[in-house]
Amino acid sequence: MVTDTSRAAEAHVQGLSVKDLAAEFGTPLYVYDAEAITRQYQELRDLLHARLEIFYSFKANPNAAICALLGSLGACAEVSSLAELTTARRAGFSPDNIVFPGPGKSTDELIACLDAGIAALVCESLDELALIDRLASERGVTARVALRVNPNFSVKGAKLVMSGTSRQFGIDQETLLAQRDLAARFPSVRLIGVHIYMGTRVLEERVVAEHTGRILDAAEQLAAALDFPLELVDIGGGLGVPYFDGERALDPAALTALLNPLVEKFIAGHPRTRIIMELGRYLTAPAGTYLTRVRYLKESRGERFAIVDGGTHHHMAAVGIGSFVKRNFPMRLLNRTATEEDQAWNIAGPLCTPNDTLGRKVALPPLRVGDLIGVLQSGAYGPSASPVLFLSHGHPAEVLVHEGRALLVRARDGIDDLLGKQYSYDFTSADGRASAG
Image 1 (cartoon, rainbow, N blue to C red):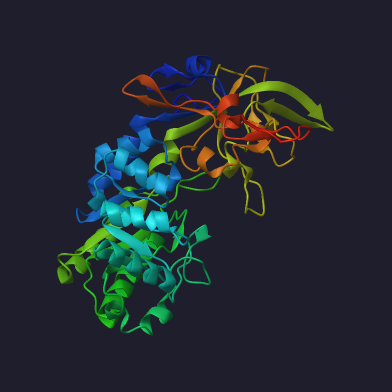
Image 2: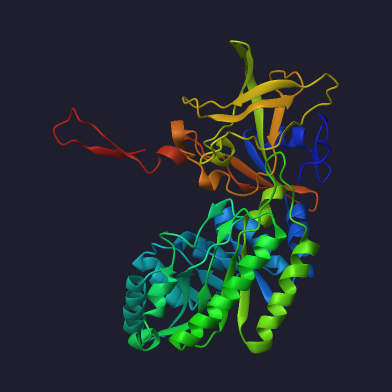
């Protein structure tokens, strides 16, 4: 987490100058603060009911070092691709602490989950259930499966609704209730639980609690109706962080004061059931800063523009896709102290599209070429959720500051990284010979 940013001032991460980090590793650059990740995880973990487990959603930030750090703190793993599953295993997560949801799993992914013996394959369709059963039978194993349910209720308060309406995720609750022989139809599958994810970016404690209560009730009813043991309930998660003006951070104490009694009541009737919460953005977003350097300054018809070396190819979340009105992530001048009054600046990247605008009319001091601008709250859904190959710029470097040391945790893409897997052809020769790179 970048410090010293209440006004324009030289910023630091665990005492390391952001200016020095930019000089050493170049820009654009993602900087993550391991101390901030630890603090965000531990504060919630200390307050949560002991039986409610935290599973880190790799999709938020799949960098192997970030995943390993959270694993070392006690988090389990929620993965949704073969690469994420491999990352989890290499980062030290045990199979019985891994779950794998996703609406379109490949056969290779299902086989890898079966071979690894993970805690639960989260099944999202009846066709997938049949395929899991066949693959498990061929291997002579029994698949541990949790049913992802699209419930017949919805709860307002999520910025992105994942369930309770027509969605590609999960099996409609009414469809499941019509399959009374489901547990018996697939002999190589053991139904063990229920997964329901209502929505994401929730910033109201009351809404999280309401989600949780209704999910626990639905899981109980489904297990009873379909006659399978309720060994696991995944209540989703969706805890948000404040990005925009007017948003406030969740209060962990207020949240757990509402959640813990629900968990306590549930385990009284289900003492052996494992209850898990998926968290990604909440754990990593506050710890990350996207660092980019001003290349050019210009004015166009009365508006100021700072053209920077980073852009939405690394940070698509900042462009405001899906929002009716563009709102800016918090941004700061990080390399120097400035005493002048703020001005309105449009922060634009190097891409050949007007959409490559990290911020519109951002309040910043008078800028200079070479200044460092940080996009804060950027530790989740950064490069992994962005078109990093647009204009063949490639992936930025990523640095994790851990115990006062700056660790390069992903190298910047170079030309060989971008072209090494492509094949070129000599279309003027008789044999059309191919060459790699």
